[in-house]
Image (tube, rainbow, N blue to C red; front, side):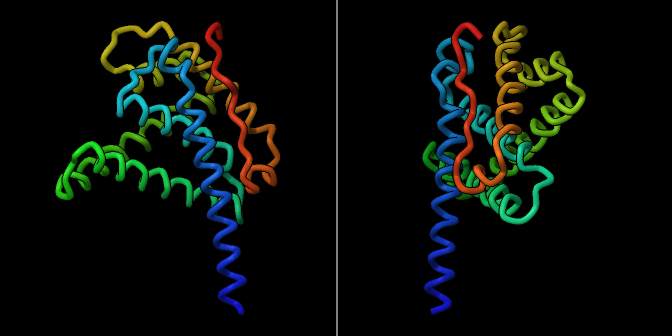
Length: 181
């Protein structure tokens, strides 16, 4: 009997985290990022955008306890499992995956620290510079970086306005990236 009850709870929690992860990935895959804002439509460019949206979600839940904290951890774990799976799909062998995973984890946490610092200081220029440095390291200037910085700020505000109860029930809404924004 207990196993059935806990099994249902685990299944319900899995449905919630799956829904949230799908929303994070869908937000990161908005075509405007790639078609108009010149985010590279490459595995690394997509990693950057999913990382950014994962950061935004984690940033929203920071300081929350209980179920929100558990969901945040499950989603980070899911993100890194997805990255591992993607590396394997790209043909990276079992020997090379751990080394690349370590590098990508370091990249993720370095980026989140930079984004968090800029947001906490309300430093739009710092956020713009961090995004440009991470998303387009190959270009000297990236004219669309301020648009992405504005999107990040909007996403923080929009996520902050959403009740925790809504988020932990599986609903997190990100803003739409707009061509003229």
